[in-house]
Image (cartoon, rainbow, N blue to C red):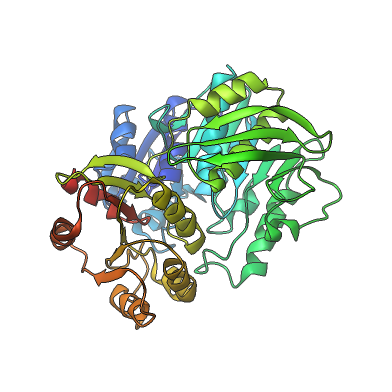
Length: 464
């Protein structure tokens, strides 16, 4: 692959993980082509600007031609995909996204960030710090970092920073020199049998670290703790509550738009300095601690770290401000789709909201909604919101499950007599019914939170 500039074809090229890899390879001079169902995505527009040939739907004709050397497919693509079958008939190498990422990681000093939650934010923070430190990293992120207006960049430095996805077990293919695990939670139950099954994948990931590498872990997380001991691995531990943390945050002050804390090296009981982080929420302080621990391991100065955290512009779809409605309500968009993520985001939104907090929630995947049904119910019941609008489940290529619908979820919530209004509104491509519901109830200085990993973020353009 690296001896000549091959033609690499991506099936599902618009996905945030696939597009990042394709972008790096395009910058390196490889001929890139691909297909996707939605050609309007920013990722595809950016790739086309780099010279990639991208078509809508499947392109079996292209795969029958003799120009393609390698076909890369995302975890969302089934084995019976016609492009994969056509390529295999020609003897073209067909590999999963993670294997291609693993190949890219072999060419650099690799840093991989894994975890059930917070990995995109942590990857973005690390990328921003390394860029500010003039280390010119190559980065592949599962979201668009606003500081660089993209999810991937090719650097000339020694480091490659990559977000490591556990959703399809492909985490096990990655061999990082420095690896981070932010937390481990009950997630991706369309792939895993139970929590123990998930933990084994993370343990495999850590066991891939070479003897000269290190693991940076959140010691506050009980599931991460349970992976220890791993005697052959050197650990750097961070956290807020655990006395075992090597790096911790004290004197924490949470504001609606930022967080301030003192950075301490716990073993020596040394105050390193004060940090002003441009993101609200205790969960983001933990993400920042992971990034700080890695940066200090690389010898980056505290001054550079602090400046980077104070100039971080955030990531698209991570509590992103989208504008105000004609009535004067603020609109925020968040990718949260797991009960734990939703809990953190609702706490942040409540602190930001001046008056009423209205949440428009689109559940993501039938399997997740089914397996975590009770957790979702409790998360909303324990929240301090004023109104909840629920629209239909975003399937993400999954088949429906009997009796697992957003309408039934709304009915289940109402049986608990929640202290907030609950309204089920069917999903429409132009969001007409949801808009009517919001116009009827939302007032000046309210906050509207669009919540979910599907298409609900597109509602913002109809409201601003």
